[in-house]
Amino acid sequence: MIQFGTGGWRAIIGDGFTRENIQILSRALCDKMKEEKVAEDGIVLGYDRRFLSKEAMQWAAQVFAAEGIKAYLINKSAPTPLIMFYVMKHQFHYGMMITASHNPAIYNGIKVFTFGGRDADEVQTADIEHYINEVTDIPVDDISYGEGVAAGLIEEIYPLNEYLDSIIDTIDMKRIKDSRLKVALDPMYGVSETSLKTILMTARCEVETIHERHDTLFGGKLPAPTAETLRTLQNYVLDKKCNLGIATDGDADRIGVIDDKGNFLHPNDILVLLYYYLVKYKGWHGPAVRNICTTHLLDRVAESFGEECYEVPVGFKHISAKMFATDAIIGGESSGGMAVRGHIKGKDGIYASALLVEMIAVTGMKLSEIMKTIRREYDGMALEERDYRFSPKKKEDIRRRLLEEKELPQIPYEVSDISYLDGLKIYLKDGGWISVRFSGTEPLLRIFCEMKGKKDAADFCRLFEEYLGL
Image (cartoon, rainbow, N blue to C red; front, side):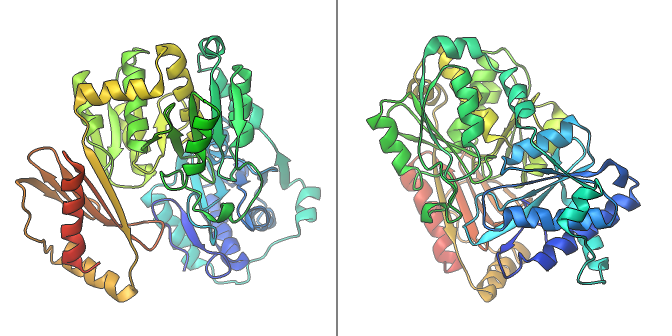
Protein backbone atom coordinates (compact mmCIF):
# COMPACT_ATOMS: atom_id res chain seq x y z
CA MET A 1 0.00 0.00 0.00
CA ILE A 2 1.35 3.41 -1.00
CA GLN A 3 -0.62 6.09 0.81
CA PHE A 4 0.20 9.76 1.28
CA GLY A 5 -0.03 11.37 4.69
CA THR A 6 0.40 14.98 5.78
CA GLY A 7 4.05 15.00 4.64
CA GLY A 8 4.16 12.77 1.58
CA TRP A 9 4.53 8.98 1.47
CA ARG A 10 6.63 7.43 4.23
CA ALA A 11 7.30 3.78 5.02
CA ILE A 12 9.77 1.54 6.85
CA ILE A 13 12.79 0.68 4.71
CA GLY A 14 12.57 -2.88 3.39
CA ASP A 15 8.92 -3.17 4.40
CA GLY A 16 6.91 -0.59 2.45
CA PHE A 17 9.84 1.47 1.20
CA THR A 18 11.14 -0.89 -1.49
CA ARG A 19 12.47 -0.53 -5.02
CA GLU A 20 9.24 -2.01 -6.37
CA ASN A 21 7.02 0.50 -4.56
CA ILE A 22 9.27 3.44 -5.43
CA GLN A 23 9.05 2.49 -9.09
CA ILE A 24 5.28 1.93 -8.93
CA LEU A 25 4.83 5.43 -7.52
CA SER A 26 7.16 6.82 -10.20
CA ARG A 27 5.25 5.04 -12.97
CA ALA A 28 1.96 6.40 -11.58
CA LEU A 29 3.38 9.92 -11.71
CA CYS A 30 4.54 9.30 -15.29
CA ASP A 31 0.98 8.32 -16.26
CA LYS A 32 -0.42 11.38 -14.49
CA MET A 33 2.03 13.73 -16.23
CA LYS A 34 1.22 12.22 -19.63
CA GLU A 35 -2.51 12.50 -19.02
CA GLU A 36 -2.03 16.17 -18.05
CA LYS A 37 0.19 16.73 -21.12
CA VAL A 38 3.12 18.06 -19.05
CA ALA A 39 5.49 15.10 -19.56
CA GLU A 40 7.65 17.10 -21.98
CA ASP A 41 8.62 19.46 -19.13
CA GLY A 42 10.47 16.70 -17.27
CA ILE A 43 10.75 16.32 -13.52
CA VAL A 44 13.26 17.37 -10.83
CA LEU A 45 14.45 14.80 -8.27
CA GLY A 46 16.51 15.19 -5.11
CA TYR A 47 17.56 13.11 -2.11
CA ASP A 48 18.74 13.50 1.48
CA ARG A 49 21.26 11.52 3.54
CA ARG A 50 18.98 8.67 4.61
CA PHE A 51 19.79 5.06 3.86
CA LEU A 52 18.90 4.22 0.21
CA SER A 53 17.88 7.81 -0.62
CA LYS A 54 20.32 8.23 -3.52
CA GLU A 55 19.57 4.78 -4.88
CA ALA A 56 15.82 5.42 -4.60
CA MET A 57 16.20 8.65 -6.59
CA GLN A 58 18.05 6.75 -9.31
CA TRP A 59 15.47 3.93 -9.36
CA ALA A 60 12.75 6.53 -9.84
CA ALA A 61 14.73 8.27 -12.60
CA GLN A 62 15.12 4.99 -14.48
CA VAL A 63 11.33 4.67 -14.68
CA PHE A 64 10.84 8.25 -15.87
CA ALA A 65 13.54 7.72 -18.51
CA ALA A 66 11.91 4.48 -19.68
CA GLU A 67 8.68 6.43 -20.16
CA GLY A 68 10.48 9.14 -22.16
CA ILE A 69 10.24 11.75 -19.39
CA LYS A 70 13.48 13.59 -18.70
CA ALA A 71 14.61 13.46 -15.08
CA TYR A 72 16.84 16.23 -13.70
CA LEU A 73 18.70 14.76 -10.73
CA ILE A 74 20.33 16.93 -8.09
CA ASN A 75 23.52 14.92 -7.87
CA LYS A 76 24.44 15.57 -4.21
CA SER A 77 22.34 15.19 -1.09
CA ALA A 78 20.37 18.41 -0.82
CA PRO A 79 17.83 20.25 1.34
CA THR A 80 14.18 19.73 0.45
CA PRO A 81 13.70 23.53 0.06
CA LEU A 82 16.26 23.47 -2.78
CA ILE A 83 14.07 21.11 -4.81
CA MET A 84 10.99 23.24 -4.10
CA PHE A 85 12.89 26.35 -5.16
CA TYR A 86 14.09 24.78 -8.39
CA VAL A 87 10.61 23.52 -9.31
CA MET A 88 9.24 27.03 -8.70
CA LYS A 89 12.04 29.01 -10.37
CA HIS A 90 12.17 26.90 -13.54
CA GLN A 91 8.42 26.29 -13.76
CA PHE A 92 8.41 22.52 -13.58
CA HIS A 93 5.02 20.92 -13.07
CA TYR A 94 6.40 18.24 -10.76
CA GLY A 95 9.31 17.47 -8.47
CA MET A 96 10.17 14.62 -6.09
CA MET A 97 12.31 14.51 -2.97
CA ILE A 98 13.47 11.24 -1.44
CA THR A 99 13.21 11.85 2.31
CA ALA A 100 11.31 10.90 5.43
CA SER A 101 12.11 14.31 6.92
CA HIS A 102 12.17 14.04 10.74
CA ASN A 103 10.96 10.41 11.00
CA PRO A 104 13.13 7.76 12.72
CA ALA A 105 16.07 6.34 10.73
CA ILE A 106 14.20 3.14 9.80
CA TYR A 107 11.89 5.21 7.58
CA ASN A 108 12.31 6.72 4.16
CA GLY A 109 9.78 8.24 1.81
CA ILE A 110 8.90 10.55 -1.06
CA LYS A 111 7.55 14.09 -1.10
CA VAL A 112 5.90 15.26 -4.32
CA PHE A 113 5.85 18.91 -5.35
CA THR A 114 3.58 20.53 -7.92
CA PHE A 115 3.69 23.66 -10.09
CA GLY A 116 5.01 26.66 -8.18
CA GLY A 117 7.09 24.42 -5.90
CA ARG A 118 4.14 23.59 -3.65
CA ASP A 119 3.56 20.47 -1.56
CA ALA A 120 1.13 18.22 -3.41
CA ASP A 121 -2.27 18.82 -1.80
CA GLU A 122 -4.90 16.24 -0.91
CA VAL A 123 -6.51 16.40 -4.35
CA GLN A 124 -3.15 15.80 -6.05
CA THR A 125 -2.07 12.99 -3.71
CA ALA A 126 -5.46 11.27 -4.04
CA ASP A 127 -5.03 11.49 -7.80
CA ILE A 128 -1.55 9.96 -7.58
CA GLU A 129 -2.94 7.14 -5.42
CA HIS A 130 -5.59 6.54 -8.12
CA TYR A 131 -2.87 6.21 -10.76
CA ILE A 132 -0.90 3.91 -8.41
CA ASN A 133 -3.89 1.56 -8.24
CA GLU A 134 -3.99 1.52 -12.05
CA VAL A 135 -0.39 0.26 -12.32
CA THR A 136 -0.77 -3.48 -13.02
CA ASP A 137 2.38 -4.34 -15.02
CA ILE A 138 4.69 -5.13 -12.10
CA PRO A 139 7.66 -5.03 -11.95
CA VAL A 140 7.53 -1.66 -13.64
CA ASP A 141 9.57 -1.18 -16.83
CA ASP A 142 12.77 0.81 -16.47
CA ILE A 143 16.10 1.25 -18.20
CA SER A 144 19.58 1.24 -16.72
CA TYR A 145 20.91 4.48 -15.24
CA GLY A 146 23.73 4.59 -17.81
CA GLU A 147 21.27 4.16 -20.68
CA GLY A 148 19.17 7.01 -19.35
CA VAL A 149 22.18 9.33 -19.15
CA ALA A 150 23.40 8.33 -22.63
CA ALA A 151 19.95 8.96 -24.10
CA GLY A 152 19.78 12.43 -22.50
CA LEU A 153 16.79 11.38 -20.40
CA ILE A 154 18.70 11.60 -17.11
CA GLU A 155 20.70 14.74 -16.42
CA GLU A 156 22.64 15.46 -13.23
CA ILE A 157 22.49 19.06 -11.96
CA TYR A 158 23.57 20.91 -8.79
CA PRO A 159 21.78 24.29 -8.52
CA LEU A 160 22.75 25.03 -4.89
CA ASN A 161 24.31 28.42 -5.67
CA GLU A 162 21.15 29.60 -7.40
CA TYR A 163 19.11 28.71 -4.32
CA LEU A 164 21.59 30.27 -1.87
CA ASP A 165 21.81 33.49 -3.91
CA SER A 166 18.03 33.81 -3.75
CA ILE A 167 18.30 33.84 0.07
CA ILE A 168 21.37 36.07 0.27
CA ASP A 169 19.69 38.64 -1.99
CA THR A 170 16.77 39.03 0.46
CA ILE A 171 18.75 39.14 3.72
CA ASP A 172 20.41 42.25 5.15
CA MET A 173 23.92 40.86 4.87
CA LYS A 174 25.58 44.18 5.72
CA ARG A 175 23.87 44.44 9.09
CA ILE A 176 24.86 40.86 9.88
CA LYS A 177 28.47 41.54 8.82
CA ASP A 178 28.59 44.57 11.12
CA SER A 179 27.30 42.52 14.07
CA ARG A 180 30.11 39.95 14.08
CA LEU A 181 27.90 37.16 15.38
CA LYS A 182 29.00 33.74 16.50
CA VAL A 183 26.63 30.94 15.51
CA ALA A 184 26.63 27.23 16.37
CA LEU A 185 25.12 24.86 13.78
CA ASP A 186 23.70 21.39 14.28
CA PRO A 187 22.62 19.82 10.95
CA MET A 188 21.66 16.69 12.94
CA TYR A 189 23.70 14.59 10.44
CA GLY A 190 21.42 15.94 7.71
CA VAL A 191 21.81 18.13 4.64
CA SER A 192 21.90 21.76 5.82
CA GLU A 193 25.56 22.30 6.73
CA THR A 194 26.86 23.51 3.36
CA SER A 195 23.93 25.86 2.81
CA LEU A 196 23.91 27.44 6.26
CA LYS A 197 27.68 27.70 6.48
CA THR A 198 27.88 29.38 3.08
CA ILE A 199 25.24 31.99 3.97
CA LEU A 200 26.60 32.73 7.45
CA MET A 201 30.25 32.85 6.47
CA THR A 202 29.42 35.11 3.52
CA ALA A 203 27.94 37.41 6.18
CA ARG A 204 31.22 37.11 8.13
CA CYS A 205 29.71 35.19 11.03
CA GLU A 206 31.95 32.95 13.07
CA VAL A 207 30.49 29.48 12.62
CA GLU A 208 30.94 26.38 14.79
CA THR A 209 29.43 23.07 13.61
CA ILE A 210 28.57 19.80 15.33
CA HIS A 211 27.03 16.57 14.00
CA GLU A 212 27.96 17.39 10.42
CA ARG A 213 29.17 13.96 9.25
CA HIS A 214 27.08 11.55 7.19
CA ASP A 215 25.33 9.11 9.52
CA THR A 216 22.22 7.31 8.26
CA LEU A 217 21.33 6.45 11.88
CA PHE A 218 21.42 10.15 12.86
CA GLY A 219 23.62 9.48 15.88
CA GLY A 220 20.98 7.13 17.27
CA LYS A 221 18.52 9.99 17.78
CA LEU A 222 15.41 11.24 16.04
CA PRO A 223 16.53 13.80 13.37
CA ALA A 224 14.01 16.34 14.67
CA PRO A 225 15.14 19.53 16.44
CA THR A 226 13.48 19.20 19.86
CA ALA A 227 14.46 20.10 23.41
CA GLU A 228 15.46 16.49 23.96
CA THR A 229 17.59 16.07 20.82
CA LEU A 230 19.38 19.44 21.06
CA ARG A 231 20.98 19.09 24.49
CA THR A 232 24.47 18.87 22.98
CA LEU A 233 23.83 22.07 21.01
CA GLN A 234 22.62 23.79 24.17
CA ASN A 235 25.89 22.98 25.96
CA TYR A 236 27.90 23.97 22.90
CA VAL A 237 26.26 27.41 22.69
CA LEU A 238 27.05 28.06 26.35
CA ASP A 239 30.60 26.64 26.26
CA LYS A 240 31.56 28.56 23.10
CA LYS A 241 29.63 31.71 24.09
CA CYS A 242 27.63 31.77 20.85
CA ASN A 243 24.92 34.31 20.06
CA LEU A 244 22.61 31.45 19.11
CA GLY A 245 22.49 27.84 18.02
CA ILE A 246 20.60 26.65 14.95
CA ALA A 247 19.53 23.09 14.17
CA THR A 248 17.62 21.67 11.22
CA ASP A 249 15.91 18.32 10.76
CA GLY A 250 17.09 15.61 8.37
CA ASP A 251 16.03 17.36 5.15
CA ALA A 252 16.41 20.95 6.43
CA ASP A 253 12.83 22.12 6.10
CA ARG A 254 12.35 22.44 9.87
CA ILE A 255 14.28 24.49 12.38
CA GLY A 256 15.22 24.37 16.06
CA VAL A 257 16.91 27.20 17.97
CA ILE A 258 18.97 27.61 21.15
CA ASP A 259 19.16 31.19 22.45
CA ASP A 260 22.18 32.99 23.89
CA LYS A 261 21.39 31.69 27.39
CA GLY A 262 21.24 28.07 26.26
CA ASN A 263 17.44 27.89 26.32
CA PHE A 264 15.60 25.79 23.73
CA LEU A 265 13.15 27.97 21.83
CA HIS A 266 10.06 26.02 20.88
CA PRO A 267 9.10 26.28 17.17
CA ASN A 268 6.03 28.21 18.36
CA ASP A 269 8.39 30.85 19.78
CA ILE A 270 10.39 31.01 16.55
CA LEU A 271 7.24 31.51 14.49
CA VAL A 272 6.06 34.32 16.76
CA LEU A 273 9.54 35.91 16.82
CA LEU A 274 9.79 36.02 13.03
CA TYR A 275 6.27 37.39 12.52
CA TYR A 276 6.87 40.05 15.20
CA TYR A 277 10.17 41.00 13.56
CA LEU A 278 8.83 41.14 10.00
CA VAL A 279 5.91 43.36 10.99
CA LYS A 280 7.47 45.60 13.64
CA TYR A 281 11.00 46.03 12.31
CA LYS A 282 10.72 45.41 8.56
CA GLY A 283 7.33 47.09 8.20
CA TRP A 284 5.59 44.23 6.41
CA HIS A 285 1.79 44.04 6.37
CA GLY A 286 -0.35 40.92 6.23
CA PRO A 287 -1.88 38.06 8.19
CA ALA A 288 -0.30 34.92 9.62
CA VAL A 289 -1.30 31.27 9.18
CA ARG A 290 -0.87 28.40 11.64
CA ASN A 291 -2.17 24.87 11.99
CA ILE A 292 -4.51 23.68 14.74
CA CYS A 293 -1.66 22.47 16.96
CA THR A 294 0.27 25.74 16.96
CA THR A 295 0.29 28.48 19.59
CA HIS A 296 -2.53 31.04 19.74
CA LEU A 297 0.07 33.61 20.84
CA LEU A 298 0.53 34.18 17.12
CA ASP A 299 -3.13 35.28 16.97
CA ARG A 300 -2.60 37.86 19.70
CA VAL A 301 0.50 39.26 18.05
CA ALA A 302 -1.32 39.55 14.72
CA GLU A 303 -4.31 41.24 16.38
CA SER A 304 -2.04 43.80 18.06
CA PHE A 305 -0.84 44.91 14.63
CA GLY A 306 -4.36 45.00 13.19
CA GLU A 307 -3.85 41.74 11.31
CA GLU A 308 -5.55 38.33 11.34
CA CYS A 309 -4.27 34.82 12.03
CA TYR A 310 -5.87 31.93 10.13
CA GLU A 311 -6.15 28.37 11.44
CA VAL A 312 -5.85 25.34 9.12
CA PRO A 313 -5.53 21.53 9.50
CA VAL A 314 -2.13 19.87 10.02
CA GLY A 315 -0.11 19.40 6.83
CA PHE A 316 1.99 22.16 5.33
CA LYS A 317 0.04 22.01 2.08
CA HIS A 318 -2.87 23.61 4.00
CA ILE A 319 -0.62 26.37 5.35
CA SER A 320 0.92 27.22 1.96
CA ALA A 321 -2.52 27.21 0.29
CA LYS A 322 -3.94 29.59 2.90
CA MET A 323 -0.86 31.82 2.68
CA PHE A 324 -1.36 32.09 -1.07
CA ALA A 325 -5.10 32.81 -0.68
CA THR A 326 -4.59 35.54 1.96
CA ASP A 327 -1.16 36.92 0.97
CA ALA A 328 0.04 36.05 4.47
CA ILE A 329 3.45 37.14 5.72
CA ILE A 330 4.26 33.88 7.45
CA GLY A 331 2.83 30.43 8.02
CA GLY A 332 4.02 27.77 10.40
CA GLU A 333 3.49 24.75 12.57
CA SER A 334 4.51 23.70 16.07
CA SER A 335 6.87 21.04 14.68
CA GLY A 336 9.29 23.66 13.33
CA GLY A 337 8.24 24.17 9.71
CA MET A 338 7.58 27.69 8.48
CA ALA A 339 7.30 29.63 5.24
CA VAL A 340 7.75 33.35 4.59
CA ARG A 341 6.16 35.42 1.85
CA GLY A 342 8.38 36.16 -1.14
CA HIS A 343 10.41 32.96 -0.86
CA ILE A 344 9.36 29.39 -1.73
CA LYS A 345 5.80 28.15 -1.17
CA GLY A 346 6.76 25.71 1.57
CA LYS A 347 8.92 25.10 4.64
CA ASP A 348 12.53 26.25 4.61
CA GLY A 349 14.65 25.89 7.73
CA ILE A 350 17.63 27.49 6.00
CA TYR A 351 15.81 30.70 5.06
CA ALA A 352 14.18 30.89 8.51
CA SER A 353 17.64 30.56 10.08
CA ALA A 354 19.00 33.41 7.98
CA LEU A 355 16.08 35.63 8.99
CA LEU A 356 16.67 34.90 12.69
CA VAL A 357 20.32 35.89 12.39
CA GLU A 358 19.26 39.07 10.56
CA MET A 359 16.78 39.80 13.36
CA ILE A 360 19.51 39.75 16.00
CA ALA A 361 21.70 42.01 13.87
CA VAL A 362 18.95 44.53 13.01
CA THR A 363 17.39 44.80 16.48
CA GLY A 364 20.72 44.86 18.27
CA MET A 365 19.10 42.67 20.93
CA LYS A 366 19.95 39.22 22.20
CA LEU A 367 17.53 36.49 21.19
CA SER A 368 16.59 35.89 24.84
CA GLU A 369 15.80 39.60 25.24
CA ILE A 370 13.51 39.72 22.19
CA MET A 371 11.61 36.64 23.39
CA LYS A 372 11.32 38.08 26.91
CA THR A 373 9.88 41.31 25.47
CA ILE A 374 7.25 39.42 23.48
CA ARG A 375 6.21 37.22 26.41
CA ARG A 376 5.90 40.26 28.68
CA GLU A 377 3.90 42.21 26.10
CA TYR A 378 1.56 39.39 25.06
CA ASP A 379 1.30 37.21 28.19
CA GLY A 380 2.47 33.92 26.67
CA MET A 381 0.82 30.65 27.71
CA ALA A 382 2.25 27.22 28.52
CA LEU A 383 2.22 24.43 25.93
CA GLU A 384 2.18 20.71 26.66
CA GLU A 385 2.83 18.09 23.93
CA ARG A 386 2.48 14.33 24.26
CA ASP A 387 2.81 11.39 21.86
CA TYR A 388 1.32 7.93 22.35
CA ARG A 389 1.81 4.66 20.49
CA PHE A 390 -0.99 2.14 20.15
CA SER A 391 -2.03 -1.19 18.64
CA PRO A 392 -4.22 -1.22 15.49
CA LYS A 393 -7.15 -2.35 17.67
CA LYS A 394 -6.60 0.52 20.11
CA LYS A 395 -6.41 3.01 17.25
CA GLU A 396 -9.79 1.94 15.93
CA ASP A 397 -11.28 2.14 19.41
CA ILE A 398 -9.99 5.69 19.90
CA ARG A 399 -11.11 6.73 16.42
CA ARG A 400 -14.61 5.35 16.98
CA ARG A 401 -15.09 6.91 20.41
CA LEU A 402 -13.47 10.26 19.73
CA LEU A 403 -14.22 11.00 16.08
CA GLU A 404 -17.27 8.94 15.18
CA GLU A 405 -19.34 8.78 18.36
CA LYS A 406 -17.73 12.05 19.56
CA GLU A 407 -17.47 10.98 23.17
CA LEU A 408 -15.74 13.40 25.54
CA PRO A 409 -14.63 13.28 29.16
CA GLN A 410 -16.11 15.75 31.65
CA ILE A 411 -14.32 19.02 30.83
CA PRO A 412 -13.57 21.05 34.00
CA TYR A 413 -13.31 24.34 32.08
CA GLU A 414 -15.71 26.62 30.24
CA VAL A 415 -15.80 25.52 26.60
CA SER A 416 -16.36 28.06 23.82
CA ASP A 417 -16.20 25.73 20.80
CA ILE A 418 -15.45 22.17 19.68
CA SER A 419 -14.02 21.40 16.23
CA TYR A 420 -13.49 18.18 14.27
CA LEU A 421 -11.67 19.90 11.40
CA ASP A 422 -8.62 17.69 12.01
CA GLY A 423 -9.07 15.24 14.84
CA LEU A 424 -10.58 16.92 17.91
CA LYS A 425 -9.90 20.44 19.16
CA ILE A 426 -11.59 22.02 22.16
CA TYR A 427 -11.41 25.79 22.59
CA LEU A 428 -11.81 27.28 26.07
CA LYS A 429 -13.29 30.67 26.94
CA ASP A 430 -10.09 31.81 28.68
CA GLY A 431 -8.06 31.28 25.48
CA GLY A 432 -6.77 27.81 26.30
CA TRP A 433 -7.23 24.80 23.99
CA ILE A 434 -6.48 21.12 23.53
CA SER A 435 -6.01 19.15 20.30
CA VAL A 436 -6.15 15.34 19.97
CA ARG A 437 -5.31 13.83 16.58
CA PHE A 438 -3.59 10.93 14.85
CA SER A 439 -0.24 11.76 13.24
CA GLY A 440 -0.22 11.75 9.44
CA THR A 441 3.45 10.69 9.27
CA GLU A 442 3.93 8.19 12.13
CA PRO A 443 1.76 5.67 14.03
CA LEU A 444 1.14 8.06 16.94
CA LEU A 445 -1.70 9.81 18.72
CA ARG A 446 -0.70 13.40 19.47
CA ILE A 447 -2.11 15.66 22.17
CA PHE A 448 -1.28 19.38 22.22
CA CYS A 449 -2.58 21.67 24.95
CA GLU A 450 -2.01 25.37 25.63
CA MET A 451 -3.14 26.85 28.95
CA LYS A 452 -2.29 29.75 31.24
CA GLY A 453 -0.25 27.47 33.50
CA LYS A 454 2.04 24.50 32.83
CA LYS A 455 0.25 22.41 35.47
CA ASP A 456 -3.16 23.13 33.95
CA ALA A 457 -1.91 22.07 30.51
CA ALA A 458 -0.43 18.85 31.92
CA ASP A 459 -3.64 18.11 33.85
CA PHE A 460 -5.80 18.61 30.75
CA CYS A 461 -3.59 16.22 28.76
CA ARG A 462 -3.77 13.70 31.59
CA LEU A 463 -7.57 13.92 31.57
CA PHE A 464 -7.65 12.66 27.97
CA GLU A 465 -4.86 10.19 28.68
CA GLU A 466 -6.92 8.49 31.36
CA TYR A 467 -10.21 8.77 29.46
CA LEU A 468 -8.77 7.07 26.36
CA GLY A 469 -6.72 4.53 28.34
CA LEU A 470 -3.40 5.66 26.87
